[in-house]
Structures are given as C-alpha cells and as structure tokens.
Length: 213
Image (cartoon, rainbow, N blue to C red; front, top):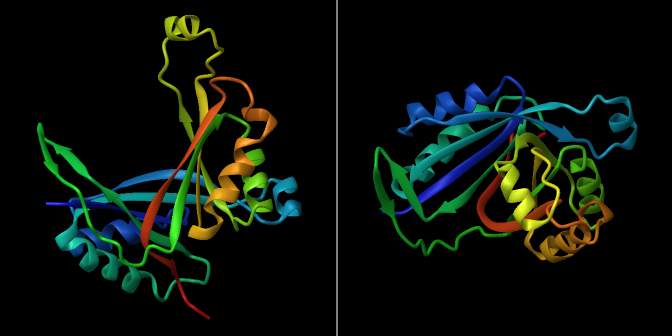
C-alpha cells in the first residue's frame, strides 16, 4: 500500500475546518502547526502584519487520498478568497504502532508544482523568501523549529550549531524550481557550514482553497 501526505496551509484557527472534513472522509487524523505567511508586500512585512497560518499535515493511504482531498475542497469552497492552499506529497513508507508499511508510488498525475523546503537559523527565513520571490516564487510559510544537534556534535564537525531554526515551505511551478533553489543557495546567510539546508519534493493535485471569485 502506498501513502500520501496532504498538506493544507490556511488562515490561522481554520485548520480544524480541514481536519474535521478529513476525519469525516476517513482519514486517521491530522497534525496542525502554526506558521506565518511571508507577505509579497514589503510594506506589510515592514509593519509586521504578515498573517498567521495553520499548516495541516494529514497522512493517508492512496486509496482514500482523493476522497479526503475532495472533502477538504468541498468544505472550504465557501470560505473567503485566499483562504489557503492544499497539495499532496508522496510518502513512501509509514510507521505506525511499531509496524512499517508502504512502498514506491508510481503516481504522476497533476505534478506541475514542487515543494521547496528550507531550514535556516532563526531570523533568516525572510531573507530566503525574499531571494525566492525574486526568482519567481509568489510566497511561502515559515514555521518556528529547533535543531537536534548535541554540543559534542558541534565540536566534532567544527561548526557553530544554532538550535533555533525556521522551516520555510514554498510551493512553486515546476519550471521555476531550479532558479529558486539557486537563488536561495547563493544567499550570504547560508554561506557558513551548518547555516541551513534546502531541498525540493514533487507535489501533486495543488489547488487553492476558498471562493474562486
């Protein structure tokens, strides 16, 4: 059996709209993280009024994926415009209650987007987003996180490990992926060893949530 991770990024305190619809459609449940939207407006960013976001992770087997996906879209169709977005990422294996299940997925439908994940030291997500936007990205969501390296790891590798991190999620059209990754790679704040990583994952079935007009 193969699995998919459904990721919904919506307005803060609206994550329950997604999780409720998903559970009613047969999902195992979900995890809601709090993030912040990085505005395309420099004026809004300067004033510190960028919007809070709920980031919802729902893991499901592929047999139920489309039913759950459709249920979420239906549950949000009357929400305001720019309510959020929803997309899927392949999850090759799932570990649950001590068992491992899953395998390779050959799904190729609707793969017009890529998820770029950037993990940087706290305070640099805005710099990474600014570089990504210049390369064609429209926006992203930052989540506070922490590193797990130990003090002796830092000494062994000869680098300064900063425990406070930010995880930045950016969904871009597939043809823009390489240019966005290159723009992030060349940032001064990522020039030191241990200062951050970035990687991309293909996503399927990307859609905007909320009223269409």
